[in-house]
Image (cartoon, rainbow, N blue to C red; front, side, top):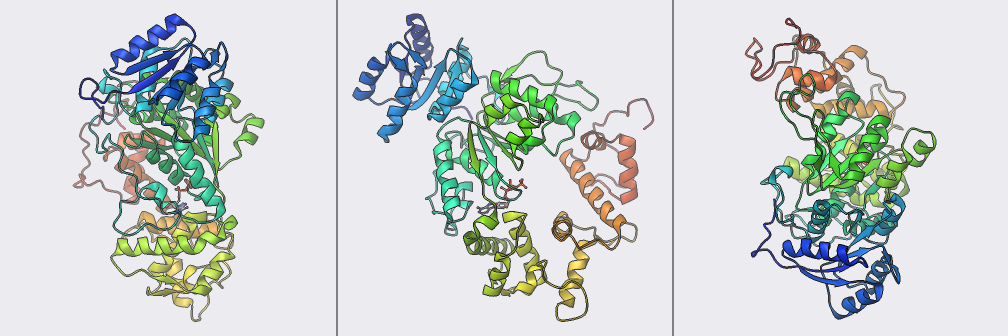
Length: 544
Ligand SMILES: Nc1ncnc2c1ncn2[C@@H]1O[C@H](COP(=O)(O)OP(=O)(O)OP(=O)(O)O)[C@@H](O)[C@H]1O
């Protein structure tokens, strides 16, 4: 939500440093019109004098000054340790290298000459945590969305311990672990949250990359804005452009109305591009352009829309190697990877296991409204020698499953379904094995269908299959049907039951959707037997 500028908005003090008098006047006038108090300086020396005499909210400095580099000011402010200024660097060279250098030196953001005044105002406003005075409301994705513009008060840091019950828990506080590796991650999050620098979070699946991205967002001055996450590996190639940049009505079959993409949805906030390494090369080019221009052009549109978005991305791949192999654009890599946060796998920080396990069991108990179960020391010891390739998510799934299969209370190693445990055969664990097998094989989907597997059951069963190289489903068909059903239902839910749109999303025609839904017995809520789709256009070419 935009904070209105004008008499009610607080006045901010800004220091602008540039040796070109005309530019200085232009910046000054622009900022005065925004209602700020401005001081100017034409050299490093003058800037140092102003900074010694006063404190500012924002320092805007040219990179090249007659007596040195504007970066020196950034370093000096950083070294002082207690300065409030956020720095914006203006570079005449437009090269990514200078911008990257500035961001690494702690700049909140950078601008390239010739400076676009609208962009200038947006960046300054963003550093001040407010919207420019005459922000066009339509450009903001959630003008009156559920999130408030004010950053919620940051909960007390917990040092990686679970926060006390009853507190609103942010992502930073949920990020548990007292290992040195996790302490380093937390320290980096705090540091990068202060700037606009793009961050690449690198780590294996389930190590907490998204949690880290959320923590950066929440701790940043954009924390009151939207956080939008998109998994670049999960979108069909044909739809990526529209997902990222939006589309205009009629831009392609199925585009029944204008739709914003994730860039617009993240306006004023943070866009998290998960699995960035999966983005096809052609899309990498478009993404690079959007990042450089800070503007996007929706599919089917003629004009570009400015966007004010901080980019965070994540990958489980070695992106440098992908660059070397020609699968990832080097220029985009440098743009996104200004700061990197590596997340170590759980097997390299096993000391975090007890804390994580306890927190997961407490959360699951709170969700179920029961007393938390405990992990027997032998169970913890057994877990600690596992490779845990799925990391924290695998731990969560194992504990979830163990709780479902055990009687609660104390969980032993036998409850954890660890690969070393003997599979099958009659014996003390046979009952649990039988229940495990039931989860692994989704029930048949043909009539008479008992309740189809829930997404959680499927996910748990699927995870178990992937985890254990010796395990196979008893019958392949029901498995595949179960997965297909899950994806169809998900697509239908995402598109409010509209089969055409869901089909487009899955690369299927309406006819194929109908066939598959009928085969799997999927009914939409409004299907009282005879499907009728409100708002669905007649299928192209007449009959489906
Ligand atoms: N350090 C941690 N403390 C507490 N919970 C964590 C931690 N790391 C991860 N988790 C939890 O593990 C699960 C997976 O985390 P997340 O989705 O952030 O991982 P990811 O690396 O983005 O996974 P993927 O690569 O598969 O998308 C989430 O439920 C998250 O809350």
